[in-house]
Image 1 (cartoon, rainbow, N blue to C red):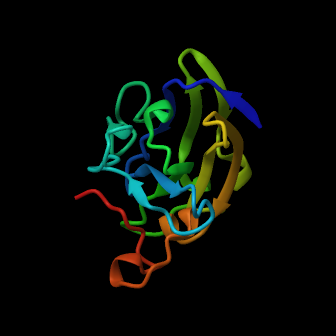
Image 2 (cartoon, rainbow, N blue to C red):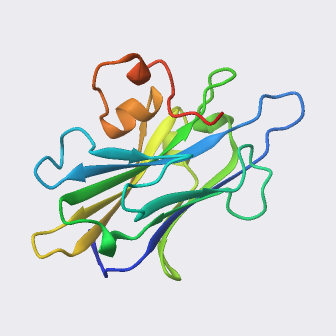
Length: 185
């Protein structure tokens, strides 16, 4: 575990476009924020395409839905130093959209992940350890009792998209584990 300053952190994601004749690959960064009273419970809220945290401290800048963008295709910014003290844990993951067809990280061309604080790179990965997964947790940030944040690196692959990724299992059709919500329209 690495101790972090109260700065701004980025989770960056990129991949190459699918070759002609194959369905486009589409990845999304998702963040789940947990209350200090329930750091391992249900997320208090999710941040994904088209949304941001209620206080604006976690937001996503998507550049490309198909890997055809220049540079990093998606960048999620986490201003953890400004995040309300009610929240003590943030889990960040990557989800492969499953429309059309079933895709895993093995189907993607050159996926790359980078977590950084300012110019300091905290973690980099190519998803090689989770090739059979459809989603993966890529970073965990935890606030201690003094208010300082720690970064826990590690790539953990999961099936069934965002629900297993962040433990979001409340009842309702929007949380069907066979539906890889959230999706861009």
